Amino acid sequence: MKKKVISFIVGILFATFIYTYIRYEYYEIPSSSMLPTIQVGDIIGADKFGEPQRFDIVSVLFKSKDNAFIVRLIGLPGDYITYIDNNLCINSKCLEKNSLYSTNDNTIFSEGKQTGYNIQLLNQKIVPLDIRNDSWEWHLKNDEYIVLGDNRDVANDSRYLGIINKDDIISVIDLEM
Image (cartoon, rainbow, N blue to C red; front, side, top):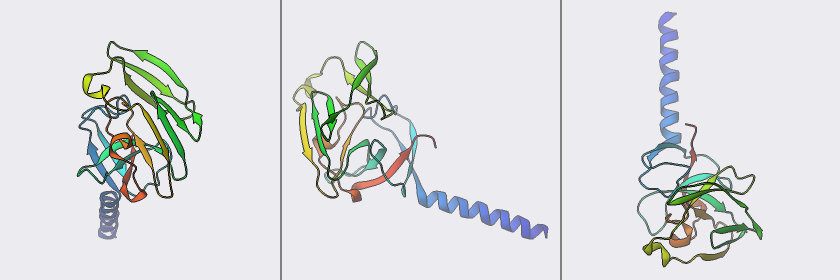
C-alpha cells in the first residue's frame, strides 16, 4: 500500500511538472520598455495558453524581429486607436493621465481609471527619440492588435514595429507567478 501511495504522489508531481513546463515560460527582462511596471532584470512568468485581454501584458514576436518583446495589449480587432502627444484614445475615448510622481528624468502617470497600470514618460526628450513621430492612428481590422510599452518614450512597440496578429502573441504575462 505504501508503494502505491508513493508511486501515486510521484506520478502527480511528474504530471504537474510536465503541465507547468508545457504551459508556462519565463523571461528575463533585458530593457526598460515596460518601466515602471517591470524592471530591467526581472524574471516574469508567462502563460502560453492564456487568452489575452485589453491591457494585459503579453509577449509578442514582431515579424521584423527574431526575439520576443514584452508589451501591453492596447488595441483589439475593430478598434480605432489614436496616440497623439502621449495621449491614448481607444474608440474615441481618451484615457485620462494623472501624474503620480516625478524625478529629474521621468514622470510616472496612471493611465485611465480602470486600467490598473502606470506609464513612464521622459521629462526631456533625448535626441534619438526627438525624431520619433508623436502622432499615430490605427483602424484595426479583423485579427489586428496594437501593443505599447509602458515606458512610452523609449519602447519599441507597434508604433515602430507595426500591427501584430493573434498568432504573433506568444503568451500572457502573469506578474504574480
